[in-house]
Length: 343
Image 1 (cartoon, rainbow, N blue to C red):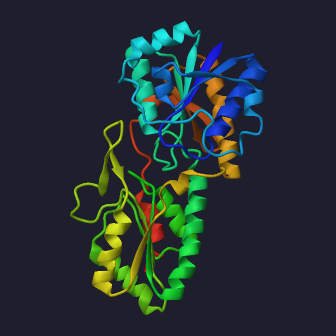
Image 2 (tube, rainbow, N blue to C red):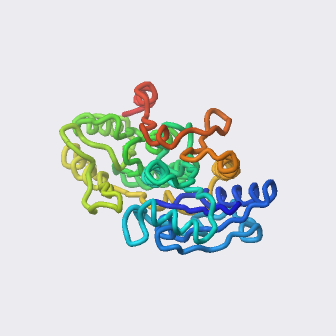
């Protein structure tokens, strides 16, 4: 069997570990031949293919990024896009199946290709936001939390030195898991997440409470957070290839509002793509490797239109439709738990 692998959407730590896990499992257990599609779905649409051998994945688990490259190309657009053209390309190159590694947009596209064109595809969930409901955790999340926590620790020292309020913006389009975990780990005085809109008055109350205790306030906010009264998340960067707003900048909106209302000098830091970069944590290396190995088994079991996922400590297989049918939001009890620590 010949399997094509792609990494699509935003990059994150652990992508290379998935590729390594899949190739080693396939070569050792099934004598599989592997190829990679360069730059995600763009490589599928343009038939930009490279061979992947066991030699190519040596020592790859600890390496950040992706050796295949990534993009936000929509596989239903362009001259070579759509199920019929993609199936023709697969047949011409003798490729029996695709392992698509990506997040919500990538997996939704994979599901459509399977449902509308019968493309043999298996998904591997990739999202540092940890927002897919069909998996308890996705690789990249643990590393992103570690990076954000380190940023909080560093901001705290400079905040204390100047008596400033620091507002740190982390990723989280629809859900606030990165903000929640890093904020709790770093001792943030307020954690603002998409699931829990807050008023600027409430935020300033938390900030002033911190100042009254002689501390420098530190606020962590997810990029998808909305103030009460906002109808959508803050965005000023246009749309991506899947017509979703490119988020970012809510911290820069909040900091001057906090300073104006409290009189506390406030600064915003947008962590951005730093959360996606660098070597994956040990946890993410192990999880990504296990998911890659399980994806190959799903291919040989012909579980087309499925996705491998983590349930508890076990790797399971679920339908991509289930995986993309809902969001893994922060439950009320988890936010209430953290809220006790605010102010």
